[in-house]
Length: 226
Image (tube, rainbow, N blue to C red; front, side, top):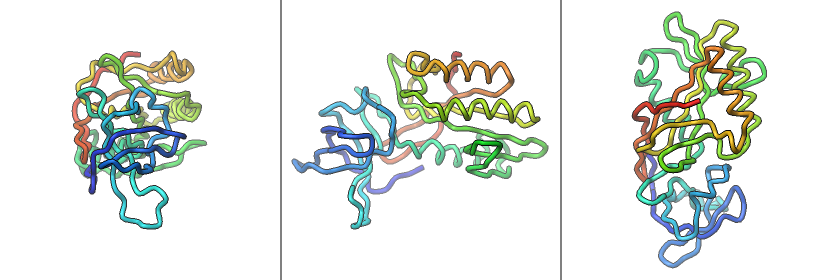
């Protein structure tokens, strides 16, 4: 996926989950943060970030925060991006046939999953999780407790028991990582649910992404350690 009107800036502060302040050419500007996660290890004062300027004059925040530099690593932190790049990847035959039927945001039971796929005789539910938390090349999910994430995992187990294929796909919004693991320190219940799902036959897999300030694209498979 491509972004238009991407500009570099310097991160200043994040007073709440939804907005941040950045500096461009000596001017302080307000920016919408497209990720409600904590991201404390990413959004440090003085860090280089990349923002997308919006053309709607009615918006209170003229900028969206898209990506951030962490040392030499560029990380996309747009929480909407993983589903968009997954849709592109699916439609080009990355996981299923290029002509497969793909329905985003499909309800099953008490959950709404990111994708439902029909590919020949296959009937598939897939939930996508974007990953931005990294330490020494190890990436972890989640970066904050997510009861909704646990609920989705338990519902995927029910999908599998009902005869569907079911998958949890971790989209790692960066390159050059070693492996992914559940963040048991932050939310042990998520890790427990993920391991239970894998034991029940739910597929758990991850891929990294090619990241540019104005682009994100799914790339190579990454090991998942449960």
